[in-house]
Picture 1 (cartoon, rainbow, N blue to C red):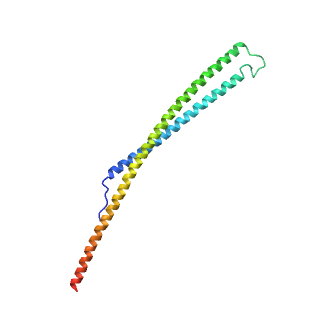
Picture 2 (cartoon, rainbow, N blue to C red):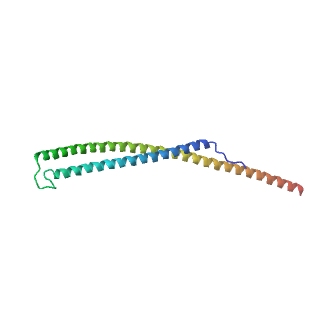
Picture 3 (cartoon, helix red, strand yellow):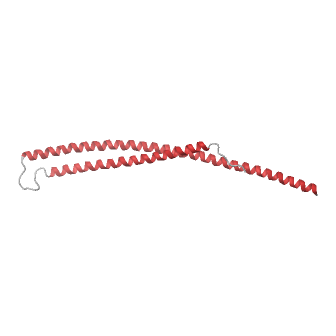
Length: 166
């Protein structure tokens, strides 16, 4: 009995390898996106921390919590300058957050592109797999038809031999 051989098997194997690579790329892009999202979260935490620090500084600008004596003009000016510097730090941190959001948008675009590529690779493998299945089914039907013809011939020969002998 002959064995089915799919003539496009090397192509199917190549497409399966490309599908695996595409799936790995999707995983890599998802991992990169998660990493960038955690960076964004850390940057947003830093902005919030600086805002809270500035708010506390403004609240305590005119008084000394540890002492009841009034602040000198130099101390008030120094605290005011520190609050302004914190404002600049907050602005810089917010700019970093905005930049990180752009990085995340780019990561999401790369992820979507990788997902589309992986879906296309899966479809190509699926098409070749279905083609292989149909070819194999066709091969088996043809083989079965040949066997039926051979059995019919054997049956006819046996019938003719018995008929002659009687």
